[in-house]
Figure 1 (cartoon, rainbow, N blue to C red):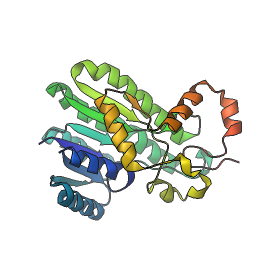
Figure 2: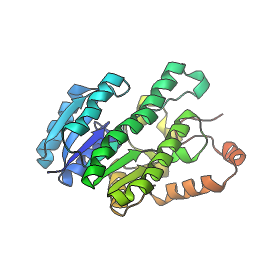
Figure 3: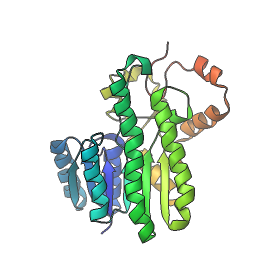
Length: 255
């Protein structure tokens, strides 16, 4: 049976991917810091879908623990990698300790780079495999360090998709907008400031993303409303975006 490795699978988009891939018949390797919560999720998914779930507790920002996850790609075939782990900060760049900004950079950029590299080498040798890097529509905007990190993820993934297509390996950046998950609660964000029509369901989002992957798309932007936002961001002057935006797609209110 094929195996998929998912980072940040205990809630939200990561949990939706875990259930989607289990329904597709994949055994799972679940990676997050909270081992107890990972074991609970693993037991629930095994009971629901009858697949095997391996628990790999690791703080991905810790280089030694990240190395253990990288080693997992060498110890047994992983057909699908979902780089989903991440967090946002409510305060702007200059108001955060630089150590916090550096930790966010490490998790959103360096970890994605290293795990993708660890994953694609054996995939190239086999001539098959897929990597889904969870990015954000925020990456199409100029909204501080979070948006900058997600812009990198999208461009990195899209470029790699072109390079690896002929080798049988698919790479896709998933760029959602606001999704009903724990992400914004952990930021301390007031979700009521976001209009209800802007929110997406994690299960629907993942189902759409999987279809896009199967169609060979390098960038997946679920829902028409976020496709329009991404398209508009490409052609709207930055000064106008800054004037019109009172809430960024990273969840921070602008004043």
